[in-house]
Image (cartoon, rainbow, N blue to C red; front, side, top):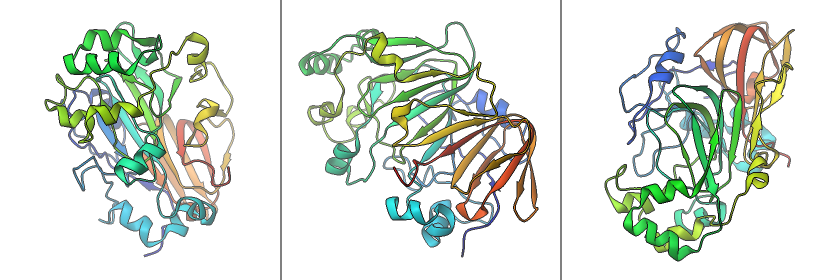
Length: 347
């Protein structure tokens, strides 16, 4: 079956997780007539247009289209229609992207992700897990994320912290970054990090579920889930133990709330080899070029108008997947949309 030539509105897709959250997802999604939401305490992630499964839990995480097919199967059946020729020449039938809504109902554990080379060697995967966060909401006092060690550390010190499960010391070793809606943070593979309670993000990442968790005891219950079966001696080889001072850290962060143009590039330049994201607030009909894309409507109401003249109403809480075959279309209305895309097929 060929790819559809129209955007497709998607329901919520919330596989069970080990940490609490989901209230902000439920609140956002409740405004959308096209979404059914699971608001249980352990539904903190909504995997949008996902062709990725949770580690060791196939087929959990996959998106099912309204016609009953898995999105992954649909893309594999017609990669050119879904992704475009240039993308397929570079990435094959992989979308090269996973988008999530992530609502931290509690602080996440200190963890990190492997890069492409480590993932190829140890997980037989083309992709590691570089990611980025677009903060769309916060609650509580001092919403905070944590990224990078404040001082350079040796592997033995970190291994001792992990063996002792010294959570306060691990968290205290990281830079604490205050965030508000409109802030974005790029998280390179290897960088230790955590998201604080009350932070609600749209997360872009490479399409894997490889999380190596230093602080496993109070979250995962089993040490093997922390190192994904590799053993920490091996897993820690993927960890960035270097120091991230304020100047270096600033290269990962953008503050975009005050930018009022119709299109705002949201992410730090170093994210471009991995994914793209922009915030769309049309002041007049805004033309969008053909591309596989995931759209998250964060506020307002608007319209997607295809070249054929077909019109799709969009509103707060909607999530859409756009096949390349949909061609060029226009967005207009009093609406804010976060458009997430794979990396450009031509670097």
